[in-house]
Image (tube, one colour):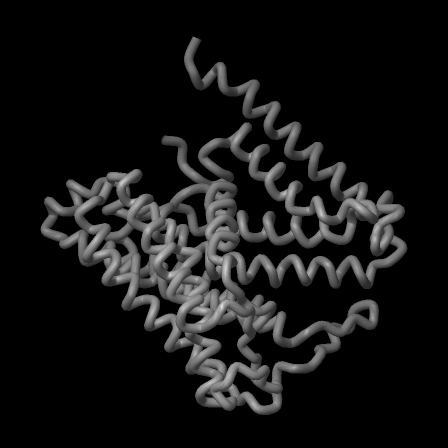
Length: 351
C-alpha cells in the first residue's frame, strides 16, 4: 500500500480536527462566552469588533517582521537566529534618531503634536537602512561561506544576537522606550459600525502590513530578481549553471529581510514600545508564523500572521476571567495542531 494512500485518513482526521476546533471557537466566542471580559459577541458586538481589529492590526505587525524572517529562513534556508535582534536594534535606532530630531535627545517621551510625518518616517527609514547594512556584512562575511550548514549558521547568528543585545543595553540603556507616531495619527476614526471609533495609528499599522505584503509579492513574482531567488531556492546549482550569480541575489534577499525586521522594530516601538529581551520574543513570533504558514510561502506568512494575531487577541479577552494569562498557550496549541496534521505548514510544500 502506497504512502499516499496511508496518509489519506490522517489528512481527513486533520481536517475534521481543524474544522471542529474552528466551529467550537466560533460557538464559544459568539454564543457561549460567559464569565469573560466581554461576554458573548451576540450580546456585545462592539467589543467583538474591537478585538477583531486588534487581532488584525497585531497580525499586520507580525507579518512585517515575520515576512523578513520567511524571506531569509523560509526561502533562502538561512538559519538567522539574529532576526529578533535586528528587530530590537532597529527599534532603538529609530527611537534615538527621533529623539535627536524631534525631542531633546535626553530620552523623554515626545508628545504626538511635536512629531511631524517626516520625523517618524525618517527614523524608520534610517533604522531599516542601518540594519540592512549590518545584515549585508553578516551575510557576506559570516554566512555566505556556510550555505546549507544549518547548525553552524545557527551558532553564528546566536552569537551575533547576543552581541547586538549587549550593545543595545550599552548604548541605549536598559529601559523600555517608544517611538511617537506623528501628531495627525493621534485620533480615533469613526468606522460607522456599532458607534465604533478606532485608533488611526493602528489602522496605519495594518496598512503598513498590507503594503509590505503587496510589495513583496510584486518583487518575488513580477521581477527578474524575485524569480531568480525562487529558482535558486529550488535548484541552486542549476541556476548557477545558467550564469546567474546566485550569491548576489541571495545577499539582496538577506538585506531586504533584515530591513523588514528593523522597520517592524520601528513600527512596534511606535505601537507598544520596545525594550531589552524583546528580541527573543520576536524571534519566536517569527518562527511560529513561518512554521504555521509554511516555509518559503508568502501566502503562508500572511495566513500564519492572521491566525497567530487573531488567536492571541481573542484568547486574551474571551477566555474565562482568571485564565486570560493562558492566552499564549492557545497559540502554541495552534502550532502543535498544524505540526501534527500538516508538518510542512498550511501553504508549505512537502519535502
